[in-house]
Image (cartoon, rainbow, N blue to C red; front, side, top):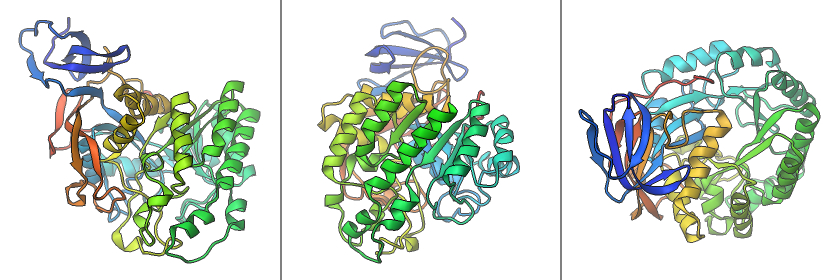
Length: 445
């Protein structure tokens, strides 16, 4: 065996073949082998035995708004990646908007990479953006290493990132399909949104009525039609409407290249529990009713939903006004996604292996991160070590992201992350975080 510098041992290691006692041999930041639990520790290697805590592959969050540079008062690479590390996430992929400049040209990508390079506590990749006027920039961005391209089909909320109409979507999709790239889509139909009742209100029911399910359903139907016609790869972001699941399932069965994600807030929070004026719960598309949530969980169980990611979209406190119509729409959950999902998953009879499939393997596969997402030889030695039975109550003061507004405040959650490891180095030890050691990732590196 190659020179091994670390052996991480546990009675419960989640591998692609299942959960078992094992000793993970690490060499130079890479998993060299997954050995029997009783295997002899190679000479010169350090043994770290975590007892009965569960060792998971480090989580991958492919939907994070870091907002750096330009809106660093909302978030930043230093704080966002510390929150990720504290939550067992070892890789994030940054969204192209809410930073200034947005990641819509190679030059703008380089600006963002330069800002992130010395601040990343975990590995960071980047999505590019597809705008009405940047079709010419898509292939250069692909060649520069972005993992795909995000677009909106309705207003994004920031002027510098306008939405695509159907004709513009078709042009961008045709270009991206030409190099087998991936388009990831905020799918809400602007015509349905315009037709819905819009009014200033502190009542959550009024906000929910302003973002109807039909807006998602129609946009997803149109997107599937475009993907089918062009042979393009598309991904539906932050699915909220369970009504769209049969449509997506049928498209997958037909061979349309479509994948879909959902988020912790849609899977653990419900419209019925949101108080008036509590805009920490506001996001677009919105958190819907409990019966809708049940159907989303069934979509996960059936494999229609491919992964769970945070859509971490923070803002400063002053933007979270009590008026749902004007408050910034975004939920901060980067540090809490794993315990939030595990708490609800275990209640519904799912296993930690399921959670790994949804929150590590699935997002890694989506982005093409071949070295992430599993504990097996040849992958990066990225791990989250979790006590799945321990509980904690969410205290915003203990969160690492810059603005500690959270819809989870006061909730008691199962699953304490006891340590996080990036390429064989411990970057989080029971909440004590190491200095930045994350790398900037590019597609195929």
